[in-house]
Amino acid sequence: MGEGLRVVLTEEEIKRKVRELGETLSRDYQGDDPVLISVLRGSVYFAVDLSRHISTPFTLDFISISRYGGNANPFGIVRITKDLDVNIASRHVLVVEDIVDTGLSLNYLLRNLKTRDPASLKVCTLLNVEERRIVDVPVDYKGFDLPDIFVVGYGLDYNEEYRNLTHIAELKRPGR
Amino acid sequence: MGVITISREFASGGDAVAGLVAQKLGFTLVSKKTVTENLPVFMQEGSSAPVNPKKVSKNPYSKEYINALHEYIYDLAIREDLVILGRGGQVLFKDFPPSLHVKIAASKAQRIQRVMRHYNLGEEAAQKLIMEQERTKKRYLKRVFGVDWASLHLYDLIVNTDRVSHEDAADIIVKAYRIHGEYREVAGPREALPGAAEREDEGQEAGASFMHASEEEFARMLDFYRIKWEYEPRVFPLEWDSDGNVTEAFAPDFYLPEQDVYLELTTQRQKLVWKKNKKIRRLKKLYPDVNIKIMYSKDIKSLLRKFGMEEDLS
Image (cartoon, rainbow over all chains, first blue to last red; front, side, top):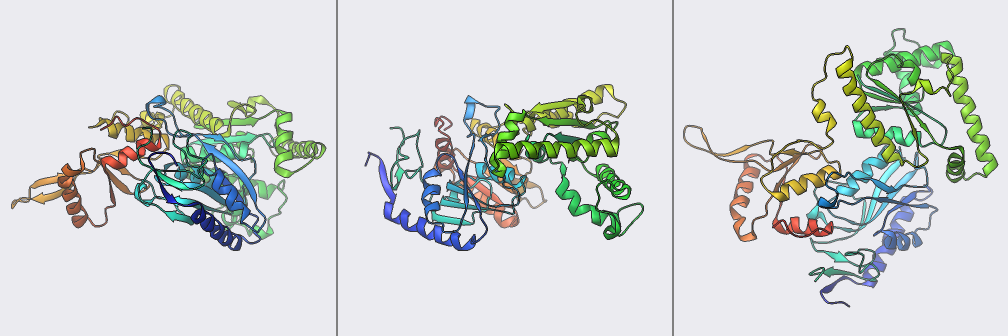
């Protein structure tokens, strides 16, 4: 393990929780043929593993939205950079996130998806950091609550590094 | 009130674009679905000639159905700002000054691809479906209004979604509507609309002067995610002297109206924050219904780190 990393959730803990969430979702969405929307890129690892534990039929799709970049693009506004391929009107939709913290991007995403008239719209996140919340967003299914620490691994990156870790770790002094 | 009509070629993405335009402008979307849901109620309760909706022919070409539909849409337009998807809106509101008529188009090849993907059809079946749908649209406009659906002169703006995303198409329409509106104010007979500058600016509080760079950065971030905000909109009195004069007050930095929450950003070092904390405790005691969150220096740093930005706003 690299310098400055402290294990927060082991591979086994994650696997167990993902299986539990998959079982819960299989029950809750039984016969609904839901659309699982993985928010690129961080949530891909979680979404794929989660989908393996969902026993009811579902459709998997991906969406990507631009991220705030500060002064580099001071007048920009959030945009969908990769839209869904499936039509979600009248479908049961589950947004799959790796982490929900400020709620800013999820708030935008939910507002956008709502305009497409899904039958239902819920959120499943592996990690939830309530302390960092700026805007309230509904979290219907969550894996773990975390304090306000900077975490990487299992899809979460710091400048594209550490995504491939099979566990989740706190990055104490990123970039140094 | 304002009206944007959106006519679309089948599988051009017009439905999604219309939804986004309505969302961005806060307009009510009138679509086939909302008409189906609301028209029967209107027929019975809102119409100038109430009828039992069960007795009205479901045939979309029947005179009584068409009359009720048009009265319903006109009635709604008096009360609300609308984005009207289909329903011949471009003809219904042809001479209505505060309106913009938009057509969403896409190449046949693109639309065939989209239909094949969405409906899981082969190429031939997709082509057939597109032709059928277009025939229906043409027939409707011809029979109800006597106009040619393919005529480009019915529209102020045509957006081709081959290379323009739904999101960008919606932004283009919103911008066009605003430019169109401003032109009207200069050239048209209607009285000038107030607040043109605010409507022009997506962000709020244009020209708000911030006390600190971190506040400005934070406001930019909220703008980016389209979260409405106000800067120091309210001062909360905290202490009064014996004559009732306010001796201490507190003005939180931001208010997010959609969330009904005040945010106070503090970039001071943790040990210097106690005074502010004390004020906030007092505020919570005096105004228990006010929702306030404090973002400390470490919170702001973690936010900047999240967005991959330099930690230069100490």
